[in-house]
Image (cartoon, rainbow, N blue to C red; front, side, top):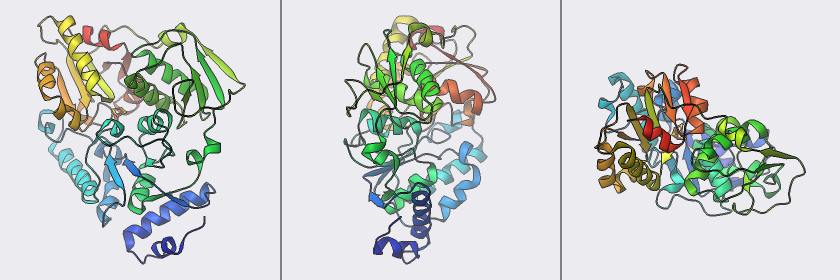
Length: 386
Ligand code: F3S
């Protein structure tokens, strides 16, 4: 990979150890992927924040000095920074998690601790802009719905890109690598968690091939968020297109797979016997909080929930929706920020989890001691709580 004189100076360590290490990571990735050069990025988003998943690897982040070169945001960590003592979190974990959080913050990374940076004020990248994001659900949303350009970065490469302000030019940064390779035609009407089920299925079907998805109706932003998260959970692709909706238009690929109602509904399981309800993977938007509140009113009729019920959202959204959050919590539901059911150790005691999230369906059994996850529409999830 070609480096400019300035980049070579950094590579040789003339701007200090931190930048040297970051440049070494970018050069190694660029060389493996035959990148011709580094290109400037507008923002970076960092995963690998929860002490549950990163462990003591954070000692490396602690050694880094200076600050990031571009606007950078953090994914969820392992606990709510304000409510952790009310969660099932040990003091030892809290101390370690605070150290990880502080290490990232000291580098100038905005501690938003959410997987929906694109829904925060000023957080959505423009079409065609190059970024370096990790967190598969956010990568798929940024590439597919917003038309920004990012590869599926890992925690180290996103951090390295943030520290240099550049990323290697390869993969989804290049127009020729963004063409759809397979066509998915869904003939059934879809709504709500159907998009979690559809995304789960599409990820399994396409593997690493970019799909062009044809749908009978236009999904909402929240439905696209769930579709993105579920495709990212089961597939290894960082981009999809939806005919007539997503920003890039392409010729139709020859290979086609049809999806019918039964292919989607087969993912649904009964809501009975769940011991916890968890909504907010990816983190809930303001609109989803409003919808959940409406459902609580209808299904609850003034009663409190009988099962543990958690909603996960971004702190900025919880603060903006403070009054509504109080109304939701009056039903006995807990609205948690900075973390989620998957990356926090606080929820590992549950055995049967009810959710509207396809991503949780994939990751909770892997990361939460084999807990069983049942997918339901949001309305069924709320109804099951009473
Ligand atoms: Fe976000 Fe956690 Fe799900 S990071 S996408 S809520 S697994």
